[in-house]
Length: 230
Ligand code: NI
Ligand code: MN
Image 1: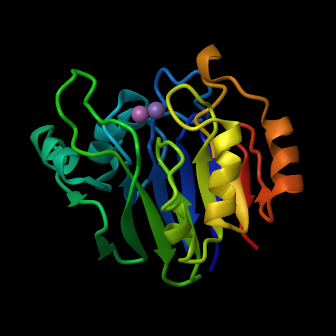
Image 2 (image 1 turned 90 degrees about the vertical axis):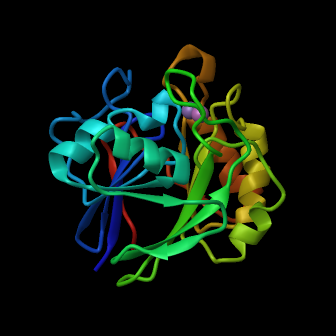
């Protein structure tokens, strides 16, 4: 059993977790880097960090087509029900739950969260997934600033951290290096960059700094590219 993940552009990823299809923040339609079509991706669970349109994306359509469970913040889960999504599970910050093949722990994120129409979306979050068969720990930071409690998340022993590096709306490359030193993941994957000029970053330069200034290995993916955990 194993874990692999594919970057679909921005903060969207598709994962194979021990044979189960998972999506993170599936913003595909109108994503300039979108490497998959919302009408084709598969999912048993969609994990959604917050309500902003560049994360919420195609969640409702994909959940209705596939029957995927949407695991997200409590306010967003209630909203999903009102959109006709049959299976939505709400977490709040600090809470863990066993979703079958994966245990999710909902973590803090310093950001904001509102739906595309401006209504309240609850708190933004990140999450740590513990895969039950392969025993991996994956941290998806969502949209966030650097915060020192990342050290506590790192104490869980992370195999992979997915971190935003785009700056302006989230932490940028410089702060992400501090984050990596606090999180101490074996592998670190950049996200939330290059989508638009405002968050353009040089991922190669970032990766060189990760390699020389931290103990983590950078994994820079092209949109559509897959990495398999060994
Ligand atoms: Ni956001
Ligand atoms: Mn965002």
